Image (cartoon, rainbow, N blue to C red):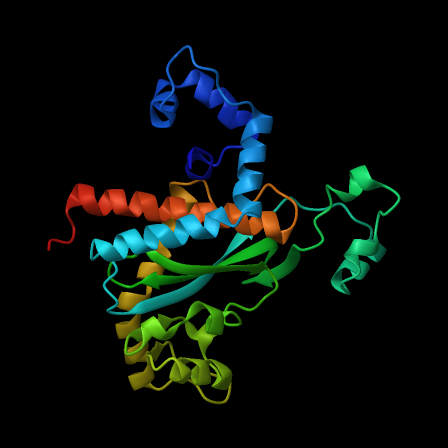
Length: 279
């Protein structure tokens, strides 16, 4: 949790635990207690990921929020954000093989090099900027602004592609808000499948621009939809951004899952401290 909130690496978090009394207090350590070293921190996170404990903890906290009536089910928001991964220095030929799905066949005679190569992360381009890494796809409760569900993909996957896996039967009857990236016949079928009220932004086309009524409707929807930006905004500004310093989508999913859980924990603290929602 300390790592994910402050954006610290394993070496950094070891140093900060030694240096900061607040970190020791958070961990229940006294001044003379032994501090876990960077290898212990790495192994602990590795075990959390391998055993599926991250997803389990995330679901348990959602259950806790439901028990405290903080998941309101009055609407859902879906969106995705990039999780930046370390760039790989590969040859053009190696990158072509990775894109073809043959990354596992590379560097077989160089095991030490191979374990540092990420063959799951991908490049993509958005609004003229290039990104390398993964995507954090989330479903958010529109009133409480808690992340209900998440899915991790490589960065090249379109925002709308995991929609079917983000939605579930418990969303029935609720309005669904999303930007125009989630428009299309396939997405509309998924929304109807789960019986949600479609509040996705309408999209204009070259030969068919939005009407004044459609533009007005989009502005009305934006007042609710933009709440999902508050979630990613907190991650970027207060949690030092969505950054993954690991190799492979398996570990990236564990780290991003912990980022989402950490966000929910801090959102809960904010709700309780400010008493935003009274019984």
